[in-house]
Length: 150
Image (tube, rainbow, N blue to C red):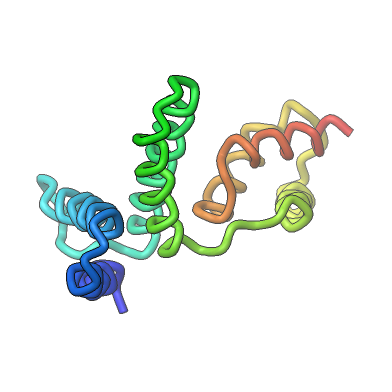
């Protein structure tokens, strides 16, 4: 089932359950999908990769907002952002553990023949594509840097 249909089904369930926070998060995701589908020069439905990018972007926005609210001691707004983030993460693939991330990056390094820090750009390009949605870009960059420095 495509993400859009899954979201619509979940919206109906949230409405029936009167779960306002979940409903808000789901509507935000649906809005992102509709905006992307109606962009000028766009073909129609989103590919799985594009859906993943949208969800990752939405999750990152919620994380960033939550950090800001935490610094400003705004517990009320922090709680809402974290609840919405949890809903968005339900639709993202399971995140890799640190060991799995290191293993995946090491495989990419071996495959592309990278030998040192000068090859970081090449490795990052491949790793970002392959690990999209499974790991945070910052975590990927840190591990690539660490592994190439050895």
